[in-house]
Image 1 (cartoon, each protein chain N blue to C red):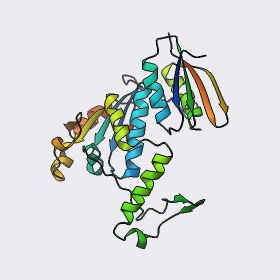
Image 2 (cartoon, rainbow over the protein chains, first blue to last red; image 1 turned 45 degrees about the vertical axis):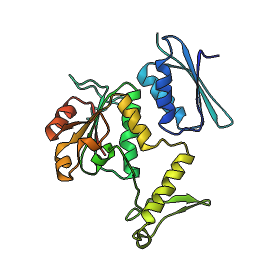
Image 3 (cartoon, each protein chain N blue to C red; image 1 turned 60 degrees about the vertical axis):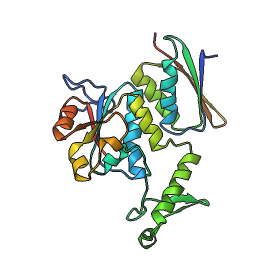
Length: 75
Length: 175
């Protein structure tokens, strides 16, 4: 289980990333954020977002069209 | 011999912060309004310092009240999904009064249904993310716009203001 949760289902690019960025503001360093998205583009985008921002992409997966990401905010 | 070793991060430029981007916004139809605001908000979310320079038909995107329209006239690539098909519009139909307004409504409904943000929403997020917005003074004079009718945040500037921004930005886009 992640420390924080964001439901970005139904949102299209770039909203999942923008909502995640907003949610990360409230996440203390070192803690994790779980994100659910239905935007297929978010797979490539969360990877790029994490590479650029230093957040760690701990997990990603897909189940029935719902994409799940777990990010860790850098300490 | 190429200095470009591989695709990926561009080579750093001495003295330029790689996390900086500027966008010249020159178009103000509903469809053309998306790329600059999507890229500005996303770049800001990824930690970039972003500046937008609004000129000519891009300038009205700063007006408080937006009623953005899309036109299928002279746009053969605009094909709306309809009953499993993609429907284009012959120019002679696009030219009929009211057709652009109907196409714009259809586009906005389509966007809403697909979870695409409105321009107003993206613009607000850009302001929140402290994207620097510069309104072209010459265009303000030319088309008789007033800052009073625009959202809070934009500053006035001209070509030199933009060029100074561009010399300090790693990524410079013209949209």
